[in-house]
Length: 346
Image 1 (spheres, one colour):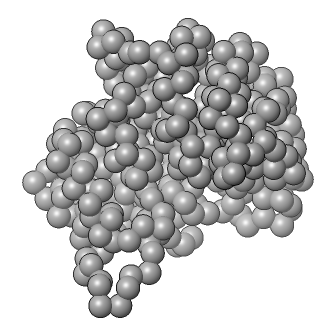
Image 2 (tube, rainbow, N blue to C red):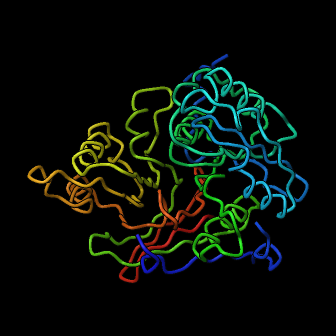
């Protein structure tokens, strides 16, 4: 998706000029504990002086690679605490399973850390999610930030505890030189700050012929489609009844996308939605002679034809430069008409 598919990014609380110049032991959940989507709990929004912890619960990342994000978040007035998994390596992972679980657990439990930024995605969270104890986190929630493989945390926390999280870019997406960054990259990174500090946000996208008009209100949930499929039937399974669901994915073949949408449909995740948002889907090149013969638009349209809720495509979320911060587990208004689509946090 390119810039013409992104119409506007509006923030009711303005971004300060100075910020734009900166260089850059497993807990078991009983049915009685599972919250209704309408009863989401929002962690405290951040204020100057609060601490953001950085950890790598999935893939490896170096200390050097997170420096641009550290410097920028410090310029926003936040303190930054770097976890032990940064620079630690176990082949492709950011340390062993025990190391990654321990680092994330410490940050979940530490009352002085008000938000946890996952340094990057890749793979690894599903290996440690059942090692984590969310008891202290439930009592004193904090923001969890990230996307892609971090979808495991979003779905587990949103579905089991009804606590809001932030689906957004991570440390590996911050520009090395803030002054040379493209406007869209700057806007997406600044959207993290706006959501963290409680500013109202509105995202819009251009009209698409496959869109289905309508205006609805619901709790926003979702993330990476491959991870949502992987977690189906587990203790981290995503609950979608009466929700606005968003999905995105990258580097998948069309037949694989079709299979994953059949999983959503057959598992009932599409049955009782308030609305559906289709974000970015980058594709693997097909093998000549083995083309699937259907576009992403057609794949989705086939699965939702019996439903009447609003649907939009090409929304600015996913593995792409226009990947804006979304507040999962909170109420939003989705409005789709001939002029395009908009999503407003309320």
